[in-house]
Image (cartoon, rainbow, N blue to C red; front, side, top):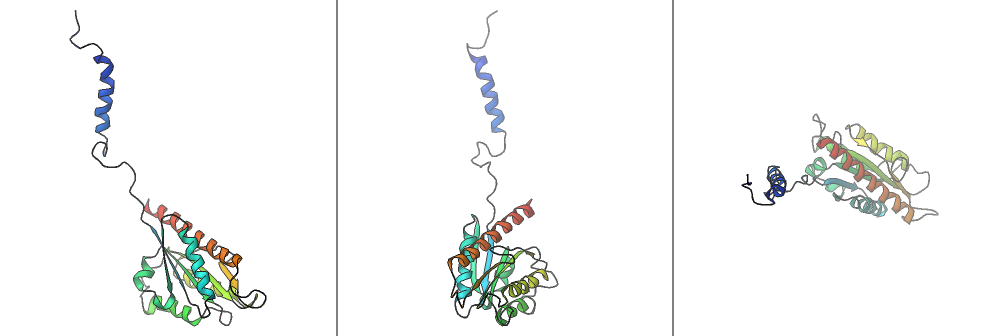
Length: 211
């Protein structure tokens, strides 16, 4: 008995069936991409106080390092100019201070005090699980830079932030007087390394939290 199908049609059936099944997959053939939704950018706030300009130079290097990580948005502001929305919308906050009497400057301390008195961080713990880091500049080698960074990190820990280091054991620092006036290339490199690490950690944490 002669077949009703035209010659060669049996070879075309599998490919036709495959095409039909492919069209049933959501997004295929409808102009919708199968790729995942683009991730929202990681927002890093770099804020500082600077009297002579040295801490400002370090802050700019931190920004440069953070921007080197794809998908990172960086905002650079002096501590007295930061708004509540800028603070609370950031995924990471990096704070820099010159050393004043082996501690953070009064302007930086006021910034942290304003988290509650001006911005109302408690009782909701609005900074909880954000990434935090510190950097400092001081005139002498043993002028209190590590103590200054530790006081900054302590304020962050008190808000249940996740603190990280980079460019040094406690953060990036620079000696600005004596045999090492101003900010040298190694100190700028340390600040960039801190910015990169903060952006990397913030991105990993944000990606994990989104799952």
